[in-house]
Image (cartoon, rainbow, N blue to C red; front, top):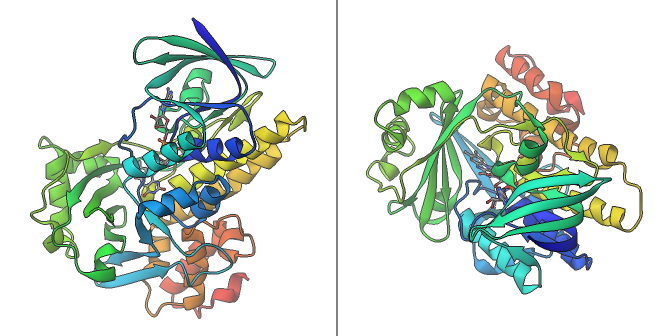
Length: 419
Ligand code: FAD
C-alpha cells in the first residue's frame, strides 16, 4: 500500500472541509483533503445565513464565491395563512453581514474546491476513508480511491468534515441520538417558469401549512428553484403512501394557497429526494488528534438554515486550534472548541424546538409586530448566535416561551423585559 504524510488531513470537501482547508493553506500548513464524491455533486443545504460570510472571508474563499453570481439573500419570508413575517438582515440587532447567498450546492461547493485547487490545495476526489488508527494523537488513515487503490495517510491532526458520511462518529462509535423529534424532508429542483418579477420572485420563503409542516422555496440565479417539504416523519410517510415522493410533494403544494399557482404544474428536475430523520449528534466533538466539524458533529433541522453556518464556524475554528497546536501550544479543546460550538448549538436548538412547539410561530405571526423583538430574532436568524449582548441569544432558554405566553394571554408586552 502507498503511504503519504501530511500535517493535517481533512475528510470531506463540503463547506466545513473547504473553510478549514482555505484557512490552513493560507498558514502554509501541509494539508490534504480526501473527498468521496466526484464534484459537482448534489447535496441539500442551499439557503445560507449571513454569519457564513465571516467564515468564507477568513478562509480566503469569499472573492471566488462572489464572482460566480449566486443569488443574493438579504432576508427571508415566513408565511402562515394570510400573515407574512418578513425578516430583512439589514435590520437586525448588533453588528454583522446583512446578506449572503442562496445557491445550488453542487455549483457552490465546486467553486470552493476549484479555488482551493487553484491555490495549490491537494484534494483527492472519489476517495473514501475506510479506516483510521490513532496512536498518541498521531493518526494513520486508510483511504480507498474508486479505482481500488489504497493509501495510508499519516497526519498529526484529522479534521472530520465528512457531513452525512459521519466517518469518525461511525468508526469510533461516537454517534448519539438527537434530542429533537424526528423530522424528514422531501425536496427537488424545478424550472421556476411562473416566478414573479423582481424581489418577490427571488425572495426565499417558507409557507407554514401546520405547526410542524412547512414548505421551502429557494430561488437560484440560474432560473431553477429548490422546492422542499418538511414535516414530522410519520406525516411524510403517510403523505408518501404507496405513490412515492413526487406525489407527496405535489399534494403538499396543493395545500399551499401561496404556492399552488406558481408550482401546480411544475416539472420536477429530478425525482424528489426523501431524507429521513436527519437530525444527529455525537457524544464528543473532539479527541486526541481529531476534531469533528459540521454535520459530522451535529445537525439540527433545516428550518433556520443553520447547517452551513455551523459547518463553517466549526470548520474554521477547528483549523485555527489545530494550527496553534501544531505550533506547540497546548489547546483546551473542551473550552475553546466544544463549549464554544455547544453555545451556538444550544441557541439554535431552542429556536428549532420552539418553532415546532408553536411558541416561536406565535412571535413571528402576532400582529401588530414588535420591531425590537423582530430585530433581535433577526440577528439569530442571521447566525449571530454567539453574541450574548442580544437577550434573544443570552436568555434563549426562556425568552421565546415567556413572550409567547404573554402574547397569548394578552399581557402588556415589551421587548426590553429581557434586556
Ligand atoms: P457536507 O456538505 O455534507 O460535505 C461532506 C462531504 O464529505 C461530502 O462531499 C461527502 O461526499 C464527503 N464524505 C462523506 N463520507 C466520506 C468519506 N468516507 N470519505 C471522504 N469523504 C466523505 N443547511 C443550510 O445551511 N441551509 C439550508 O437551507 C439547509 N437545508 C437543509 C435541508 C435538509 C432537508 C437537510 C437534511 C439539511 C439541510 N441543511 C441546510 C444542512 C446542510 O445540508 C448541512 O448542514 C451542510 O451541508 C453541512 O456541511 P458539511 O461540510 O458538514 O457536510
